[in-house]
Length: 297
Image (tube, rainbow, N blue to C red):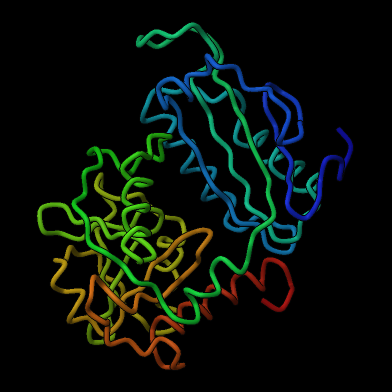
């Protein structure tokens, strides 16, 4: 497949079974364990100006997730990085999402781990920037749901049924997303981490087995001090959301978005004001992206 082939503004490029393919090309066998068991791990990377953002951090988390479930990568991280960069170049999109996953292989269905090579697949698609404009302009409306996920949420596994189920539950109730609550403690959202601000300090759930160790979350943890903001990894209850000065989400694709309503209660946030922490963090992230791409983001 040559660069740009099969592509349009609404399409993308795929990689499976060792070759680049069109997204409409049937190449994944029915007996891939990703389909039968959700037996695998994945990552999502945001591309700005044709360059992957925080790529090394994503690759390292991918490796950790695979190690935790005793899944052997089919190549080195350096080789995986080169493949991702080649896929981005072939796709030719300036703004894109790279999704890649590793399954435990293609083999006759059986619960026991097979002695076959793992299988890597990948897609690169253009980003629909309009998807996040509403959240940035008006904030997000959240509902609270019981955290029914397993106790290894730090592993970025293919098993996302509770996440998609609760996401749809939020949409059905006219909201944007759902906040998971485990035994009274707020953990995270269906596809992003969550934080609140109180008295100028950011609070976010500790990076343990109850949340995904988000890359954007980590960026904030490591860089907020540059703008004089303190971050604490402490648990908080759902009631604390209503008393917070600000609430926001952190995600690879959605970046940093304010939360303006939880259930039926508005959050007293002034996220559009330049002195708000949400706004300052958005600018901090923008600066990091600008430094990567040398473009005006």
